[in-house]
Image (tube, rainbow over all chains, first blue to last red; front, side, top):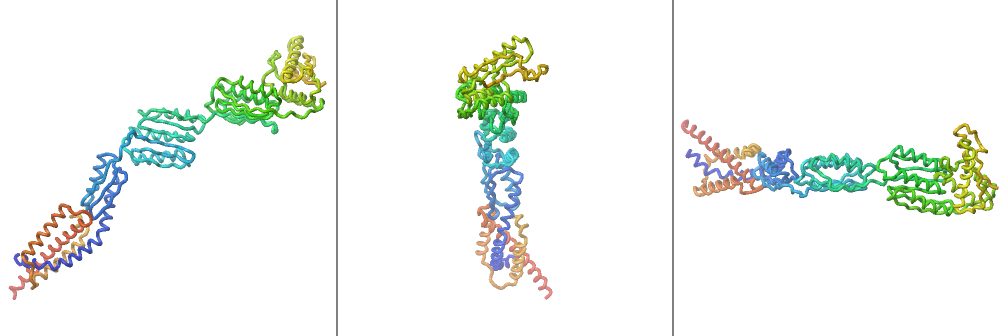
Length: 464
Length: 98
C-alpha cells in the first residue's frame, strides 16, 4: 500500500494526454448530448397541454420556456423536464397563459372569409373551433386570429360550436361571445335564416344568454315585369304560401288579359304584414301601364313604367296609394307613353274588336259597377278611342237571358252608361259616345251553357 | 453523473486504460514524483472542483465539461491505482524467486 502511495506521485504525467482525451470527448459529445436531451425533454411533455413551448439545451442544462393553462399543469411540466435522465439543471421560464377578462370570442363573416378572433381556452379547443368553422362554411377561407387565454366560461366549446353553425346561415355579420353574453349582428343569407338562427339559439348551453340579436333578414322581394313586346308578365321573388300564390296567379290572369303570365315565384316565410293585398293592388296598377316593372321589397312598392294617357298616370298613382295597407311606402315613377298615331275609324273599329275579343269588361254580379280588374282593358280602349278623335262610338251593353228581361234591359243600359262615363272621366268628349242597352236580345252564343252566357254578357264598341 | 457514465462509457474506459498504463509504468519509473506540497495542492484543487460540480455552480456547456472531466479523471485515477497495484504485485512475486 505504501508502494502504491509512493508511485501515485508519479501518475501526473498522464494528465496531459487525459486533458487531450477530455478535449476530444467534449468536442464530439456535446452536440449529440444536447440534441438527445432536447428530444427527450420534448417527449416528456407530450401529455402536457402547453402553449409556446421552447426548449433550449446548453450542456446538460435545459432552459424551458412555455405558457401553461393552470398552475398545476405548469408545475407538472417543469417536473417532467427535470425528471428526464441526464438533465442537470432546469432553467424554469414557464408562466401561466394570461387570463382574459372578459373572455371574448368572435366569429366574423365578410364577403371573402370567415375570421375567428378573441380567445380560446385550450389548443385542442382552438383546433376544434377552426375545424367546425371550415365545415360550416365549406369552400370559404377561414382565418385564425385566435389567441389562447385562461378564464373561459363553463361549456364554452359547446356554445362556440353552436354559434359557428349559425355563421353558415349569415351572408355577412359578426357573432361575439363575451363571457356568457352572445351578441349577433349581420344579414341572413336567405329568407327564413333569421328565424332559423333565433330558433337555434334556444339550444345554447345553460348560463348563456343573448345580449342583442341584430340579425337582419334579406328583403322580401316580389317583382313583376310587364313586357308588351313579348306579350308576357313575368312574376319573380317570394310569396308566403301556396294559397297566396294561387290567389296572385288568379288575380294576375284576370288583370293581364293580353299577356301570358310566367310564374317564377317561390314560397318563403318572412313576408311583411298585408303582403297579398298590397301585391294585388300593385299588380292592378301595373296592369294599366303599357310597359312597366313592379318591385315589392319588404314594405316598399316601386312601380315604374308608361301609362297609356295623361289622366291614367294620375289615377294609377292615386289608386296605388289607396290600395296599400298602412305603413307601406310607394315610389311611383310613371311617365306617359307618347300618343299613338291617329288612325282611320275603320282601323279603330278593328282595334276595339281585337281588344274586346281578348278580354271583356267585367262588372260586379247583377250591378253596373265596373270590376277594378278591367281597368287595364279600359285603358287600352281609351287609348284606341284617342287615336280616332272624329269617330262617334256606340257602346252597346248586352246581358245573358237569365232573369227578368226588363231588369236585364235596364242593367245593360246602366253598364253601357258606366263604361261611357269611365271614358269621359278619362278625358274624352262625352258627345263621342252613345251608350245603348240591348238586354239579352242580341246573344252571340247559346244561353244554355255557362260559357255561352259568359260570352253573351258583354260590352261592344261600334264605330259610327 | 451515473447517467453520463452509461452514455459515454467508451471515453471513461479510454481514461481508465490510460491510467492503467501510467500506473503500470509509475512503479518502475525513476524520475522524481510530485512533492507532498504539490500533491496536497492538487488534491485540494480536485476537491474544490468536485465541490463546484456537485453544487452545480457552473452553468451550461462548461458545467457539462467539468462533470465529464471529473468523471474521466476518476476513471484515470482508478486505472492508475489498479495499474500500480498490479505492477507491485508482479514485482513482489518475482523478487523471492530470484
